[in-house]
Length: 492
Image 1 (cartoon, rainbow, N blue to C red):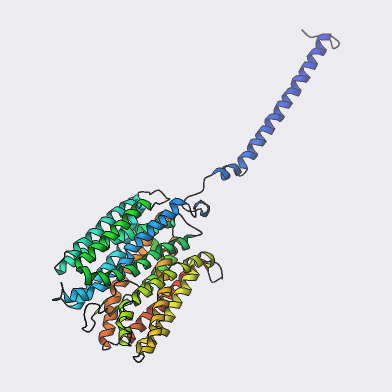
Image 2 (image 1 turned 90 degrees about the horizontal axis):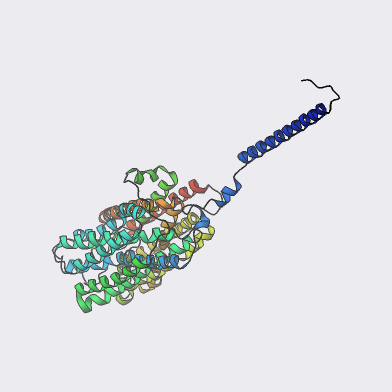
């Protein structure tokens, strides 16, 4: 029923409708503001989420502890591993002449040389397999297996009589064991340090230099006193004690990630230009110091034979024989190898610490160039000079300086691998680089031997071969640096 315009109920209805309309408009405005606010929140960058997102422990530099009890215990354990692996390899060349005069006297020097040649090869080439085990299972599996194989191989060497027994025990079993403790040592340290990685790895590498001093001195003094067998056993027991400590101390900060086996894991890094150039540089730099040299005549007075050097880098025994030829006393000449290894402690620590400040590729290029200059400008003139006591100072100076220069090779190579690699793949990638280095160690011997044979045992051209190989190494290190960071003066 319609009401007159002036009716009281009609006025009340109009006011009620106006209030409802105002309420609807208010609700509409609130809904619109709410939608706008939600739209802005949806489109705005998730600042809070970014701040709360945890750092990637594999790639973020700020996530590396750069120290702490566990980190430095890992460094100490890793140094012990290098002492018993690379340090031991630095000493095995002293056994060649002993084998020629005793257990293996019916074999030719070249046949006996395969023992030390294969020992270097298996220790380095095993890195591809050991690296895969490390990435999948962590350090403890390869460390425990390697400790057993290394010590067991040396114990079996101490009772060996036949050629094949020495080959299997010393060149294969012990070498594979050394490989399984060598690679996890380096790889674990790189997971704890980023800014200080060079210095930390340098301290680890110094362990091999210390082993290269102590083991030769032990062999020199123990074999005449207690015989071959007990000399090997004493060395093996000392190695066992150090490896027990290493198994307890070494830890990896990154949990292992088990992945299916694939050959592409080993091939994939070779598709990267920087990685390929670094591998080529390591190949030539290592090849320069794995050619045959006159063997240290420690246990006989007959003319020295030719064999592959016990250690990878340095022609220890050539320095010794060259020193004797130039009039150095036998007593002083016997200590050239410890002098050289002692000096290499500097080469494996100081350049690494500097590399953290000025760039690791930059430092490697300088040190490899310094080594090349020493070979061609100091070693070559000494080897062709007339005999005489006046050359003693030059030979000693070369031994010490060469230890410093070439020591950076073992100290910086793992650091460069880590710099251009995802940390979760560090095992496989480091192993791949050293696998090519093992081929250099194996092929350098016949190449150098052919040069010596064709030049009537004139080592001048063998030294030239070493210098050229070093030069190629410097070139590839430089190319790797350019592909990684360009031609600029930056910290690369």
